[in-house]
Length: 498
Image (cartoon, rainbow, N blue to C red; front, side, top):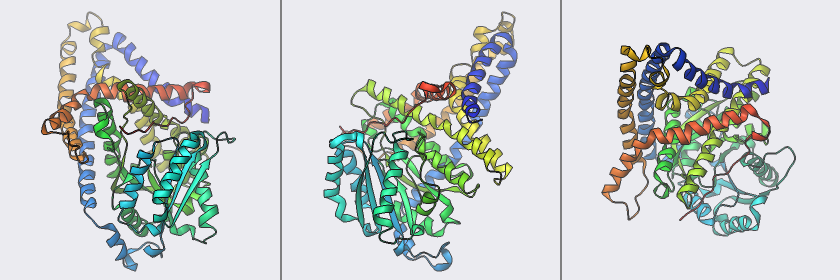
């Protein structure tokens, strides 16, 4: 059954694309109507999603102005959802790393140091991959020398290579790190598991000043805090001025999507950097060590273990991460493709989730149906919509019969689809303006004329969506469908600084 669910997404994608080509030849009238309706559907959907994007953006800007630590300190007992004083709360910060340069690690620690939250309430674990070699270990020790004394506890771990039953990657590294903290710090000091909230960051994740205060506020006030993940907004902006145009555009796609999802919390799951209760993490036996997309799968591990009693709480507060920027343009293009393909490999959530639904009978059917529909449609559209919208709408004109090409529909099809796509430019322009508003402090070379460049770059969106979103998604789903040697392992996006 699990293998069947692995085959299903890729098979659906390829069947759809092939059928549309064949129907454009055999039934051009019917498929022309489909392309027009589909284009109109996406036009409406773009405007609908943009409303959620604007709402979340305004909410984020509002929350960035709040002193969340002060709000935490002044919480009354009736405002809290659990009997825990903020002074007893501990933040465990997990930072897995491979062989990133010290400059990247240093920037992350400087942001944590600058956070408006007592550092004596923080436990930091810097977990180095053994495959990173002595150079990576030297970077970790250098970070410990500069920042170790700031925190309540600072621990360096070294995740061994080649452990049985593991895929080398972030999930297995994080599991090794948290187990080490539990064994060496949490248990010896008798820190209650319920008092610890775990923030799992990529090594390039830079929290904004009030991140820990905002997280503490939510952890102390939301309904059922021990049955919740906490999802910040990832902004891929650390090195945005170093990234080439196609990478800059691509870096805003996950940012905008996560912003939209924050205002649709019923659909929100976890992605990249996130937070969770330590007690629940121990109870589910940590991350799946034989899966690639650990950031999303941990949500389903919680959800299935607690029979549906789990949710992702939107923080409406950002963390900043790296855009894809390699030393050369070609290397950036390749790295971006591999990164998008790894993210698209998140389709492995679908068979994991569906087989879990079959086993766990207590989860209500309506919830199973809802999540199945949301996830199946999401991954299906990721792999098919770019091609249907930007490349296939004119197929009936090219492949249809001579009789069809004399009809009014044939004449108007390109014009109608073009008209609908032109309307979507308004949504594109709004996204361009929003992206400019999200830019971090400008470097000295950034002049007013660069705003025009950063605005006009969005004209390339269709090309970026096709080659660095649609194609990687089809690639990932096809690999999972075929299986065997074509399955993806964990690929770490290289981090660097110029």
